[in-house]
Length: 201
Image (tube, rainbow, N blue to C red; front, side):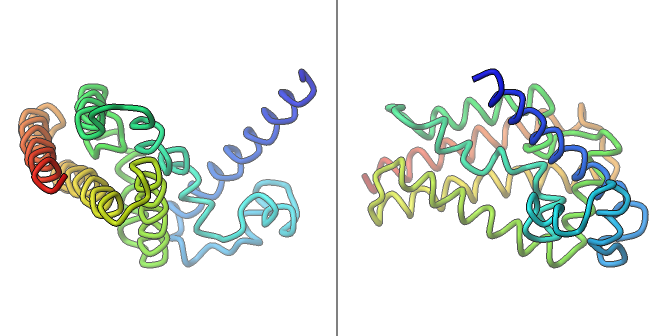
């Protein structure tokens, strides 16, 4: 058991180290200007080894948000009021300046978001990630057509709220100047969503 734990920790550290090196190179030179071979060389591993950890170049970047892919599904599993649970989680994220809410002005976080949003292949891969998040949530909600429709609305609300926060921060507004609007917008959006889903339930 201890051996497995050590192996898992080493594997996780390898993921994080290689991803960090790749993101630094992408930020410095641009995503398209850096080859996978260059990332592998900088990380001190072979290209085949890198591909064992990261099947695609885009995964080197999006690995950082991979943990969030099934987050909504994990949070609502067994919950009686899924929208309420996700609203509370999003509002807590705003209080903590969680980067996933878009309400974070740390230079590295802003640079990371800019890298994703300015690179078409990363935008496309991010949408695939959102589709998997939606599918996981729909499964937890029952797997029916109604569940898929609800999951689609929930994931869209979270994405649009976070994107709006990020755009304002990226345009130069301070986190503390955006926070109140962000909280109010989240409260309204999740409230409307809750009422809409209740009406169709």
